[in-house]
Image 1: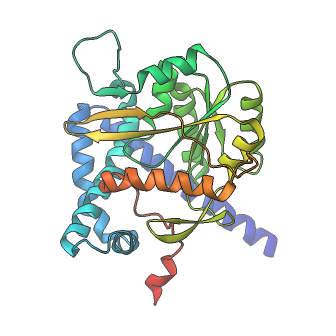
Image 2: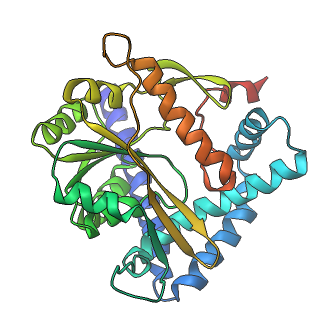
Image 3: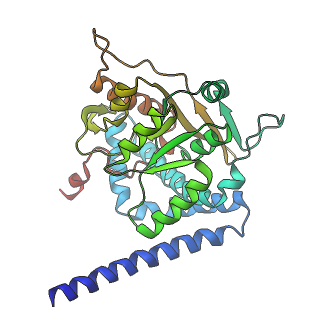
Length: 311
């Protein structure tokens, strides 16, 4: 009897997740009938209205107050609303990604996409070697691997699948058709990335996700755990590391930037300093977020402080 009830509960949960996926993708498919600008702007407006009424909004405000103690409540609220709008745009932009990425280096007139650091893209392409590109959840970070593929770079991207398996499958199919090689984040993902580097190719990773058993570091002056994966790969393959980000511009435009390689912190014997490397990544991401705070995902529990809201 207990086994029968368990099966029923699991089937109901699967049905719930399937239904959520159908509603989500049905809505996004519906957006396709509208012009890209109008649809993206409409979703921005909608999420700014709905977001503040969700439980995540309280966490967002707490994160912002901790990160920017010098800002007024009005400024905090403005950033929070902008962050909700950014998340709405990110969802809507999935639908129009093929139309949005219009970068053409031979065209004189600027399009939606402008790229900074083109010589670095070309040098990595023309002189193949193992390298790592890291980014954060800023702007539409999904456009970065699309840009890499457009420049002919063979980059394997590590990504965290959504918890909903039906959404995860759709997202994987969508990404893999436009972003090259993808590695879902799981227990064996580090070996998959290592194989790519060993073969002399590049990998891309997000470095601002919550991590439970990482290295002790700080982010916006507060203690966080940081994933040591990038440092471990650098230590093993002695590969170059490049920061890259997406910045939203007015008029539904985007700037994609790849920066010069970072000098990795090492000790007197030339060995990689793992903690200093993790802190270097945090400091780089923090500098990006401080420039455009509304373009980062403040709703997630990076500092593991959600429990404070229950006090």
